[in-house]
Amino acid sequence: MNTILKANWNYPTTIWAGPGRIAELPAACTSLGIARPLLVTDEGLRDAPMVRAALARVPGSGLFAGVRGNPVAANIEAGLAAYRSGKHDGVIAFGGGSALDAGKVIAFMSGQTRPLWDFEDIGDWWTRADRRGIAPVIAVPTTAGTGSEVGRAGVVINEATHQKKIIFHPQMMPGIVISDPELTVGLPAAITAATGIDAFVHCFEAFCAPGFHPLADGIALEGMRLIQAYLPRACDNGGDIEARSRMLAAASMGATAFQKGLGGVHAIAHPVGAYFNTHHGLTNAILLPYVIVHNRPTIETQLAVIARTLNLVGEPYSAVLEWVLAFRKRLNIPHTLAEIGVPIADSDTIGREAALDPSAAGNPLPTDAATYARLFRSAVKGDLALAG
Image (cartoon, rainbow, N blue to C red; front, side, top):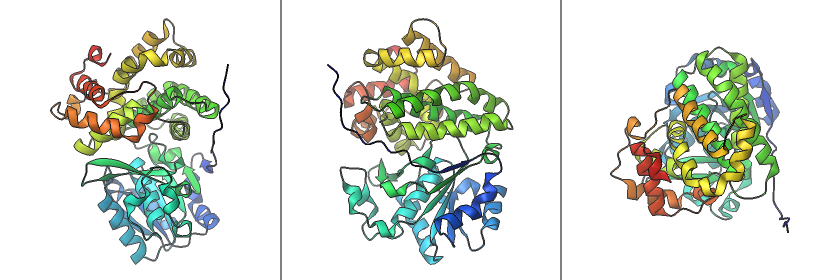
């Protein structure tokens, strides 16, 4: 007998999508009542022409470009100082996932009196926030990966504990997203590939996560199909606007879908990124096949649907795994964590932190710390058999 459960489904993001839409940044500010925005971006985009052009479009805007690749609490504090000293009234979060996360958290914290970690995504901690103290956000993604532009949370590293913490509040969701593929044209092929497979992992893990969420499932499947079709094109020709636009859509779809949940790939990737400062998307891309092997006993049904969606032939598990391995190779993604400088020595620590990570709750196969440590070792060594 099927059981119908109660659930809450939320998909309210406003997205202005298409080439040249960045020209509408002033209209977005007006729509949200922002007169003096702080543009938050990462260190690498500080002097980028597209950042300078965005600032020029909005008189009275300020710039904070102090976000590192994996944001830490000190980045948020520095951004808050810039926000308050400049008397800003809103945030333009501009860049990849790190800049988007940091921008959202800065806007969220701008009017709070409690410390940052009081708003970690635990239970109903988000209700501690003063809603009146949350500034409006415009999100402008320049990579197609995390989908942070449509999310209600930001990931920040607590350097004291080496843990990635999720700061959450429903009102952190940007009021307007400007999804302009022209801003992603200059992205190198390697970053395009890593961020693109990150989006695929979001869709894949969301679809395989337990629970009834047909909206998320449908979006996740279409996101995977778009990435299969368009990510190689975007990597081969960075100026392919159609491919770039489809990848931006797929990235937003992945983050929309993972409201349903994530899983073991993210559970391991979060501590790996916190301890070794690895690129999040690339870490996910490397880990994916190892977690597929591990989760096989509980995802056979989902793999059959994914195989049909991707038009793969043969036994679904083998077809999906072989396609993932070939797709990564086609896009020059490394096969092992060792290739990106991750040592095997800290496997017990990574396993323990992975088991504690919020993403672990969405893994379809319950997994303990010792098993996560083994999965981590398998990915460092490149031994898929060790993951089974």
